[in-house]
Length: 364
Image (tube, rainbow, N blue to C red; front, side, top):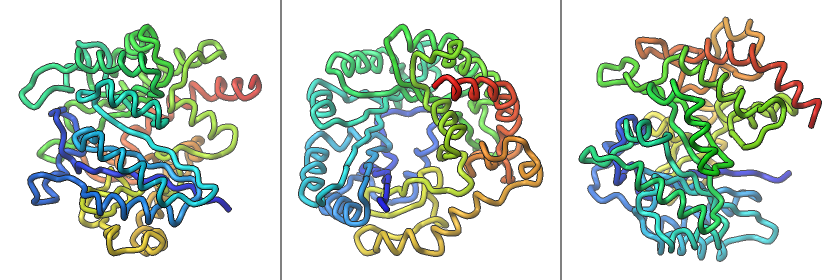
């Protein structure tokens, strides 16, 4: 049986050239004392060698922080190592998530020629994007990101737009859809923002359940397009797969089977939402990936997702949700619970969309 492996590599750790107000990963910078956090070529080679040793279909997702801070030669070296350690028949893919600020023609050519799938972070038109996606000194970035988006289009790079759904843009789903479609965007992903503030309560920029439920429904109508979807919106496409084959997307699996995260120094964690000391799994330079995957701590991390509230067990939509991602399992005060903060959002959405998903299945 072929083994599919996805690895999130964070060669700059949480370091970034922006100061986005809602960034969930920036606090991770305090985990390490080094000022200049950069992955060494020795660690990079070890990562690629060990990952290619245990899988057949491998995806390397280069993330941060901001991964372009490593410079283009680092990723040219990564491809060199992939070719060096590739086994016969292995399929290797590369994905790259970026804020776009440092992209130029050289990056665009590199992405296109090496078939990288790029995720470009953008939260909508300037009045929405510049609410939270700012430079470290508080300056807007939309005009820069828009120019980089057009650069990727010009050089025919495969990319999608990653949108963080927050308290502001969640109120404007139709405007978001129209804006991206007018830009010619064919692939979109919408990620709900839910973070705690300094007091441990729900941060003000998080999207609330009512707004998120409305967002899911209205954006779904745009995607569904009377049964003839014109573009790809990841959440709905993955739920359609769940309807067809019972294969749930990451956040809605009964167990956590997410991608391992490898930090700049080789430290390994089970998920980028849980880069925390209690979930430290080992280090790529000294530990076996097989041992990590088969270890007790990784097993405990995976299985805790299966522990859901009694209301989930009685819910009609259990097989499409499974209590949601553990990151989003909190109440209004920020306390951990065994079901999603967006439980009511998903219930209302599935109640609305169920017949349309089933109709799509009949027409495909």
